[in-house]
Image (cartoon, rainbow, N blue to C red; front, side, top):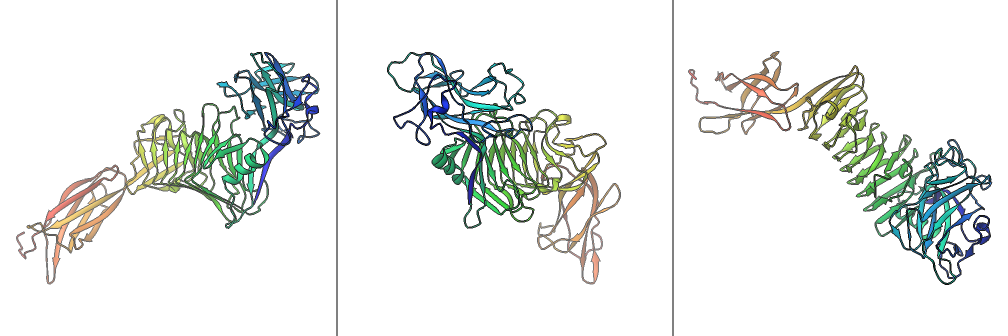
Length: 535
């Protein structure tokens, strides 16, 4: 097994001399009040604003971080440990600070905005976000202007005078990156989320992953499988509750990312949620390479809440998984079986699932919130098995949006919802919905006893095509299915045969094969089994 940091430690905050240039002084705490290493850098701050900022960074190119688009550190976030022993308001009391050698500087106010009264905590900053305050740098324009950041730390603002001489504000390890990677492993020695947590919280103190027992808190991504290449990797876990925390993370920064042609990743009863989807949602990204040689991704009986984008591949399966308040899912030939889509975070006219193969979406339940349940982007004929849609309408609220620019046929089977009246067609698109309905006939005698061997024939009125032509079973029943456009009228006839002579009663009639979940037509005809040519 191999658990590694995706990023670098920019400062361990164990040397006060690395924190003196901008601060007017800093000290190493002498009371073992630290998270990592031999100490924490601190200072006494009484009714003032002061900096604890490292001007000696490691990990970047020559100690300089380039957060600009295309830069070496594009997309990376800054996470560091902070502590105050003087209560402050989190809105402006603690801010992440960045500066370059030319004197450009800026700060991002950290969440939470609630009252904060001490204890080492991690605070996350997204360098691509606008500054809350800046000097020379503009408050907007990030990350283009952040191509040469050489100093990182915290700005503290205290509004209370304190007595004595002690470090009431402190900073410990600063890390710049993305999260934790779990790689390698075998079927007998699998990686899991506890390996990620313990590597971070118990050993290296980055601050990305922490937790107690089966409840884990995430402020960075979980990367599963090799960064590049095809090295075999195995990750498996169950019964975990993972919460991506309320921080101002960039879209896509909170991610569970799986990659590798020989990667196996299995989740069972895993709950993943966003603490505050308004501020930061999370992604599930299954790379197109996953499982192309061996392995693949499976989520069984999981619950995903507050997700942004779920991107699957052809070697992915979601089985019995519930997705709540998700923004989008791209199928990419994945199997979705027995899933529930609830309160999708979709706009009017926008679908939650983008599907290239509706036949692999089966036994799923969709509850309307807004927009469409499924957008089909590939023309073709698909069996649509036992999918139930509740509350969908027409137009921009239709269950199905055919955006394939071609012809789509959905053959609905096993009691799935007839969506023929809840389809929106895009440009040059046409949709045909055929519903497979159960059709049952019963033959009984005049005493209501079942009669076997009765020949039942039924035909469509529209074109005389045959629906059924067979004899009743020992229970006097003929059962079949009708796959076609409904409703449809039919006529039918019962005939009774016996050895040596044919005796029949020509009972013709019309019935309607109805459309809708579980619809059927049942006709019971009384057959007189006495050899009487007059009947």
